[in-house]
Image (cartoon, rainbow, N blue to C red; front, side):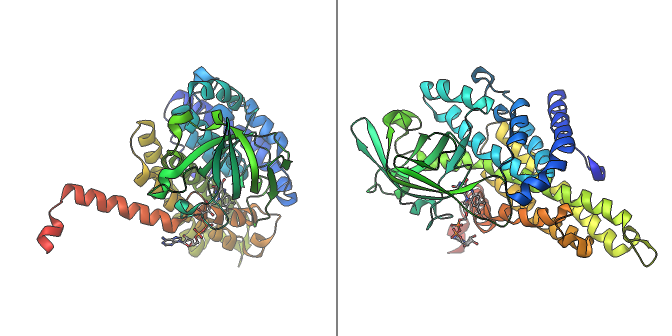
Length: 406
Ligand SMILES: Cc1cc2nc3c(=O)[nH]c(=O)nc-3n(C[C@H](O)[C@H](O)[C@H](O)COP(=O)(O)OP(=O)(O)OC[C@H]3O[C@@H](n4cnc5c(N)ncnc54)[C@H](O)[C@@H]3O)c2cc1C
């Protein structure tokens, strides 16, 4: 990797796929991304290449047509993709969260029918819980599904649905029992099927949202008005009723590792651009790389990137061992995304006025990075989750604290 940073791929298989993706990124993504980004156009040809590389099935079990690779390999691949263009990583993220939820909690019929289409990328998936009035506070969602014969009828609005338009499948969190106490027990995950690319289907309209960066991949608003879906579309079948909240929270752990990987990827791209530019650009008769003020920035960027990468790999390895990973995924997401935002800003400063020009990649990195501190649970929420887990652990190992204090 440029900048002399370690790659951390451990096995032969990991090294091969990471090398393959890096080659794809350097040869095809890096030259093409600026045009897709500036025109805000969906990168169809690059997504086709990702399909050919098998990336849509990377973590889907082999028995369902995927590559069956682990989360660690997935994270390393996401770093590479985001180093080239973060939007490509966004096309994969909601797809693979949904695939994992189906593989883990779906019925045999759902696994057998949906996963093979998903593994090839022929069917892509979105993952939707946020609503216009409720993002961090997921328990406040209002979209409902009510049973009518063999169907469920869905009403309500979903916001910021990544891949909402071109997906064939939306993993959707809705309220099926408004009276349930606590409210999250009344939530259920549905696997909504729809024709990809259609903005208007009976009971559902899809609108594209404008945004600062993270272009090319669509962010959408979904409005459900009497949308009918068969009872078989409840994730996990009848047994899945009321379990949606817990399953979405579990699913988002993979999303947080993905976002941490994106942070490492963006920060790495920022460092690589800075190392390049600092050696070329001269002020006062010498390359700016020889000024110590610039060297400090480069050193801090590189150090933080390595720390972020370690946190990401720790979380991924724990997930691969099947352990609870909310604390580690939260820390990795928090640190890597703050690192990405800082690195993007520092890279822009190193580029001086040119950093503000779309001719240099750092302008895009600066627009793309902020969504990472918001998405998959804001970094404020990550801190709350991290603190909650720390306090739980402290209480478990030393339950007498309160008694002693009183
Ligand atoms: C480009 C993009 C793509 C997205 N893709 C998806 C997607 O595919 N699927 C999906 O479901 N969602 C998606 N989201 C939504 C995203 O997950 C939410 O925006 C995010 O969870 C924050 O929710 P909010 O925007 O409603 O902010 P709010 O929840 O309204 O938060 C506003 C501010 O208050 C802070 N805050 C809130 N509660 C607390 C608290 N208790 N303590 C301290 N601070 C607090 C937040 O950190 C934030 O700074 C996407 C968002 C964007 C911008």
